[in-house]
Length: 462
Image (cartoon, rainbow, N blue to C red; front, top):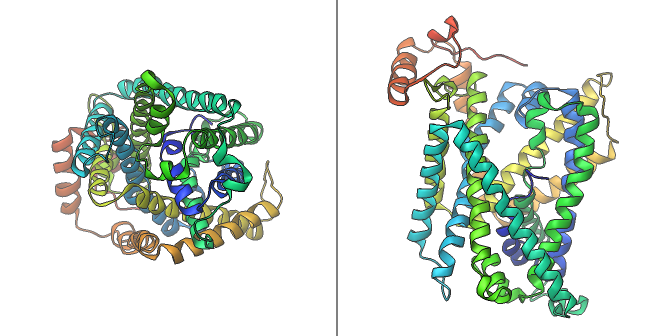
């Protein structure tokens, strides 16, 4: 639950309400979103003990479907999922920091982008300088998100106990300005899924989990209901003090909530959320750079990304790639469109992974499975997945279609960069190894004579 609860709950409520069209339906979306995460988590628990490799989706899909599909998941994660998520969190950080200074209007576009870029650059520098600094920042700033959520829920419950729950009355909660379409409900689920992202993070470190057969299901049974309860109660608290119109008009929901209820202590809310988002950016930079690092070691990304600084032992090339990709996305996207963008690709990856579970059940029915979920669980998830993605693509063809196009651009890159093994040696020595090492002062993490030659081989898993 610690990995799931993050800055998304301060970002997504506006998008969920906007697409759901009513308070009641938005709360149903939040509850059902937690249920869908539970189904996906159970499927991932089976995969985690059946294919006991760290790396999550990337490892499972590569093992089941082969190198190309695994590469496409890695490609989309490096180019879309992590940079876009970082961009959204960075924009949320800048909005919450700047909103108190622009109480009667939205913060200027340039100001939010500039502050978000400064934040990304600073945390990239911290992660390049010291792993210890990065982990200490994560430990300290994680407290911010818990402080903000506890404060919102407690104050909201006090409001409800005083009778301030007009927007939550059934007769009012299900009033729609217009009838919601299935496509809009699908987009509401995509917005909520951004806040729930992280439910599969435990599968990235499966090899390090003690007794995964017991602890993976236990983590699911505890964390998913707890997170669903916290998210639902947070939204109920918002509606105890704000009308739907006020929530939709706010660019920083928690700040508006604090201004209405906390009086002279309203400054606590933007500071708490800023701390939360700052820690979230640091955490995503840390994990995304490690994914690049792992992909490079497997031969799916340039080997420069598998190098670390000679003294600090930090993956500087991978961090710089994440930083540059995030800044580019910061300049071209709006927060809620970016959430649809990254959530669509996320769900696409989840669906491919769980389809791999069904494929493995059919092709290798006698494979040892310490955890084996009922077939209705992955089938139900896949039905929901197909409906969600289909209607999301119909409702937002440009945003979702562009994500698919970027993912598919990885096909020629795979065949040229990974499968083509007879590339000239000078390409690697000049562009990848020599210039990259001089620029970043990096080396391979361990001595290996094979790494002094051009590394074009791909460890086939087909």
